[in-house]
Amino acid sequence: MAKNKKTDDHGWDVGGRRREEDPDIQFLRLKARKARPVKALLWGILVALLIVIYLLQNPVAQNVDIPAVDYNPAGKQAAYKLTEIWLKDNPLGKNAVITSWDGCKETTYKDGDRTIPVYRHDLTVESSLGWWTVRTTIRTDSNGLLGYPSATRKSLPNTATPNGNITWPGTLSDTTASDALSRLLTQWGQAYVGHDADMLTTIVKDPDTRIKYKPLRLSDKAQATVDKGRYLDRGDVDKDENTSDRAVFRVNIELPEDQTTASSDPDLQSGTDTDSDGSDRGATDSSTLSYDVVVADPDGSPSIVAWGAPGDGPNLKDYQNRKGRQ
Image 1: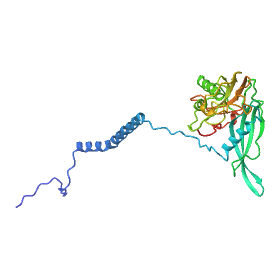
Image 2 (image 1 turned 180 degrees about the horizontal axis):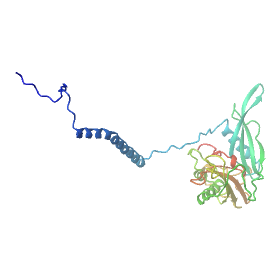
Image 3 (image 1 turned 180 degrees about the vertical axis):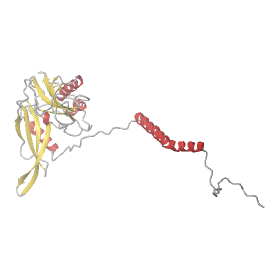
Image 4 (image 1 turned 90 degrees about the vertical axis):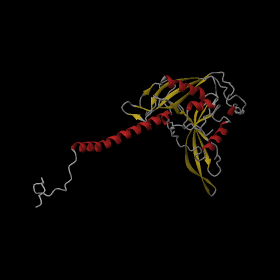
């Protein structure tokens, strides 16, 4: 008689049941499974640190945001050139120089049965007789001058008198030029009335390195001083502090009596340092010139972005004094 096999399943046939795994092994396996995300995170942090270290040691070249500029909008260069030719006959006084292009407006001109689009350009001119707004109209069919330019005198606003009572309507609050900014504005004033175009271009630091600025060629011995300034209500404005990243300063430039210094700029040594009557372009009596100069980031790394007649500061546009590429 066969002997019955002893079981401990109390009548339940569970002889094929898998034996439960050791609890210690289960704990270690669960711990390892939970540690995987942490391990991946640590590896990610390590890789990110390596990338940061690499970028610090090998910085990526910064992309300079150069403002898009149309250097010949509707005959701008023709307007400049033809106005300069017109100014050589001293219609507005001696030492007449175009200081800025202030925009243009499209209109039409009737030539017989033809209707020709023309563009009227506004230019600011400074001469021995003061400041002027010159309007030069350019034909689009020939890029030539339509008639002669017209000129109106720019008078100083009552709010910007030469006696030091300087205010600019619509500005924010007063600002004082730092030592670094005072040096920059002084250097600009001396370079602007001087003969060295390269020096003036270097001081302006136009983000477009193809631009070359032309000085007035009046004197290499001028002295410039910085008057008060105001924050402009444009750009990055801090309403709490009533400041911004644009400011206008009044710069006065004193020209000495002896202004017969010869030009050191090879681009200007072409006989054009004299007026049509043969006199030296820079030979005038002692006088003082005043300009409104707009500065970007006046409290940080300042740079000069525009200049114009006294009182025009709040209306000056960045880099409006550009004339063309080198």
